[in-house]
Length: 165
Image (cartoon, rainbow, N blue to C red; front, top):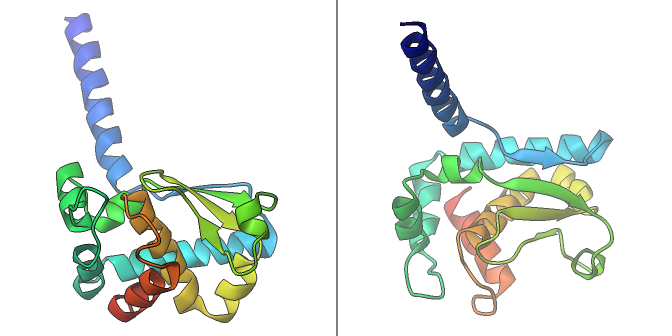
């Protein structure tokens, strides 16, 4: 009897945790002060934009290396755009060559859920919140499998800005 009750409680706890995870926020690591404020503000803005059906159309605009739209990839994962975004991991980066390049605000590799955010992101995002939000959505598209060159980075961001205004 007690064993059955303990197992039932364990199963219920696991189910409750699974449901709670779908509403979880992205993991944010190593940011402090103004930089933390900027990334958290941009995450909130990106989530708000991704909940809009007009913004979600951007997932039909791009394909992965196998020709699947990113909307199809989300469907195969059984996730909404917001749920996928909330599974991302944002980490501060000050030293890699990508961040030391002029103009890079954040980067990841196709299919990777770790988004490396460069130091200059805070300054740009705080001056232009819409662009900061779009930068994180741009990186989310890469996390879903979108390559780059083609399409060029500025083309991706331009399309995100057009769909997610």
